[in-house]
Image (cartoon, rainbow, N blue to C red):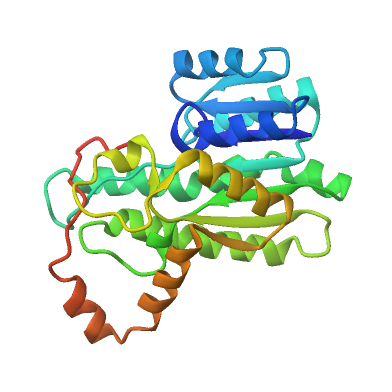
Length: 258
């Protein structure tokens, strides 16, 4: 088993790396993240001989190509590539400084999906095997006030992954979309509002890897948030607008939150 994961130094990415090591003790893991010290510490904890730390910013296309090349040279074409890296921050259209935050969120959460997968697709196609996994969010189902960049990025991620899934149909390469609800991670720790069905990250990781190994095309975790999301999607715009106009909003952060 060969697995490549971005955003692996903490949160969901770290939990996924640990879950793959637990399920597949001999797995060859490639872990990408910006924080080199935390990444190397995790790689050491997960068995340095079979875990490759690849410090890189997913928003840097060249760095992602180099990370992919290094992984393939060491272990070969991966069986699973998980584009997990993402950032979140509240944004308000027209507020000073938020244009840059909006752009950074979209680049990290959407464009980096393409840049994570692209180096591996030719090799996977040639092998007629493999699985590309994108971590989206239920926030992509409807636009949330004060989170325009994050909601837009995750809606785009869901549509991109769906397009990619159809594009690769018949090639032997699968595409899986995982849409987390509220997961207990450093990203959600800053939220100052109620988070329904908040799920521990290790529980999420177990369910996500099970969905990936089953090649489910789309999975919401926890499932209860899938029911909520479908219900929100069915609401008439007027009703949705009235319900969410005064909803609590994520704090603005001029740097964006990793």
